[in-house]
Image: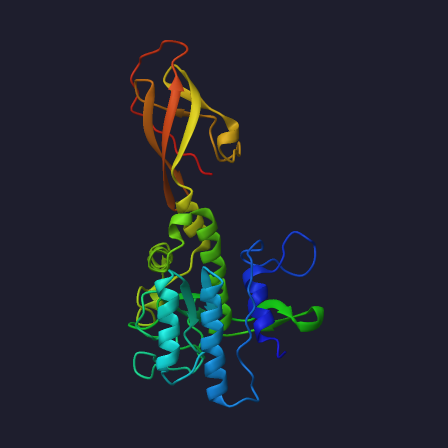
Length: 301
């Protein structure tokens, strides 16, 4: 009822394509909204509500828990609940916190619990600098994502801007949901944590701020998972015509054929921006040509 949860939910999964407001990172995701925080209640009540919410998400077979919150004190009950989520392979995306401090020294929880299913997220601005308000740590913070002046939903059909690691956490959760939808094999906490950090972009501004010096790259995370493909075509001389529906064809960017080596089957690599896409090309030798060719073609997609 104070708008924070609505704002986070909008970043993750606001409906897209309807001409209204914003689109979430994963607009078709199924959201399970679990309210645990009451600003008027004692801290111990909120802690117990947190544990109940995590256990409910585990019971309902959630794939991801977005935790845009936290505090400075460890809780054995909270650790145990997140461990139960880990046993089910549930990813736990946690905000690094907004205390302007080094989490390696001071700690912020649950983001800083030493559990493999947790990915701790700090916030960066448009210039890719960690926000002055955001926590950081080379041993405690895994990834950076946008978190400054983020526009999203508010209660009552309104919209507004919020800033913080909570918002950055929501972006990581949304991308994780898209990747899991694309590749069911990554519906495992340890695998998806490793994958999202591997596909992030190294940024010099994050050196000394995060464990991997990386920021979230949603394009790379999704494109790499779609990198293994088989294209069919017809061999004509030393080239092969590719079926146009096998890729996003732009006459200004992509050629309509790719040079192949001798034989009915040939492998080649196509450069797609910063990603190397490995493809296998199978062609029919209609013209009976056998001239060898060592050429390859770069085809931006």
